[in-house]
Image 1 (spheres, rainbow, N blue to C red):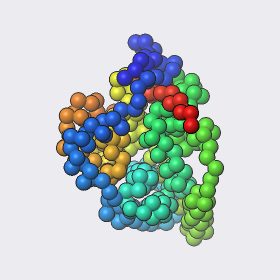
Image 2: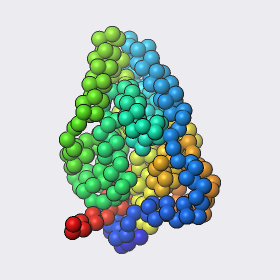
Image 3: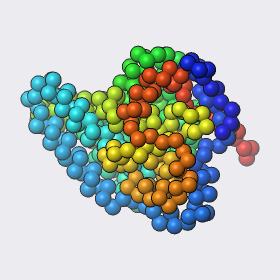
Image 4: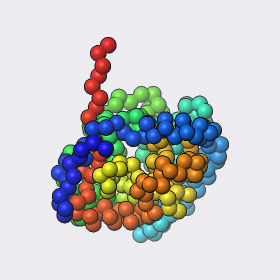
Length: 326
């Protein structure tokens, strides 16, 4: 890894870690495939993806209607301890679908993404795919990878209190950051996503009242903030070791999050669905066992907040490659 801006002991970094090498995944992919070509047999869609998504969507929408007359305290409690897990599961289902890992046909994955989006309450599936694929292709590249906090975010977060607020609101930053820093013109798919979502939300309010919709929105919000499942937002690429920019998590919550914790494996092989990523580690353990990984996403959130040397600047960045003359 190239030189970086490392924080002094006890002091939070005031700039990102800058790398002067390419992101590590493409070269590792080539090396692993040359040694273990059988990994290509793991490529391709997950045949059970549609069924899993349909079950979670149905359960969450039913729960929203069931809670139509609940108190606000009960609504918030069920949203945090139950609905948040379902909506975060659907968010990570949409992540799978952005890589076309449910069907071989891209348009079918987009339609399923719009369906999976329904309990989340706000349209995001189609837009997420646009930015997420850039995160893979241009990992850490300044001005392109919108997974990295903005300068404004990083300068505003300076201590444990402001980091706690940032963690609670990180889903807002994650969603709004690209719209301010790198807006993309919406197309027909975005309008379809918006239309279907508004129709569902309006129908829910008309038939069952505002509390049903509020439950869905609350489930999304609390599930993306100070919540065990939201630890993956921090664990994946926040630099706790200056020589490593992607981190895997091998804990039990992988079962509820489409195995997104296998994040080094995912970036190395984005065409392999989450349910098969553990096989990559089994086939090529020498490439992953030496990397730092996590067993608890809750611990990662705690470490992020309490470690005064770590903050939004704790990300690896690299300059965009100069454009070649045609």
